[in-house]
Image (cartoon, rainbow, N blue to C red):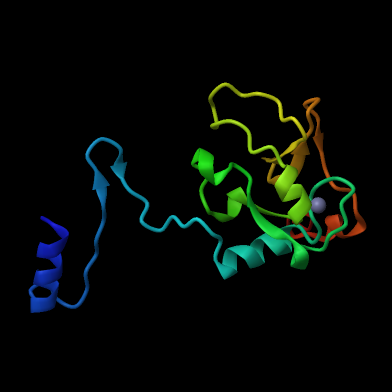
Length: 146
Ligand SMILES: [Zn+2]
């Protein structure tokens, strides 16, 4: 059934008052129709409550002045969902190494890359270490309170 046929049936009332629609790719299966490039207000608020300051070590930019960052880069198919989002200040969002396509030819970051490790956002250094921001406010973020 084409999209035009569905719209025509819906407009005629033949489909009732509730319509559930899905999109299925012939070889990849169900398609996520809700994927968005940019975080919603709710997703931004969640990211800010998780990290009250930029999570890059030794940074002190408050979350309200941060950008919302895709941990797995959107250009590498990173999803816009809460577990893949974090705040980062504009500077660290700019220098964060977006890296490789997940699972393929992993290389170490040149300047560092944020990753989610055991639920928390950390910096993966070029030397391969995972480092957290130790700013006083970092200990008060949502993931540190559970
Ligand atoms: Zn920062």
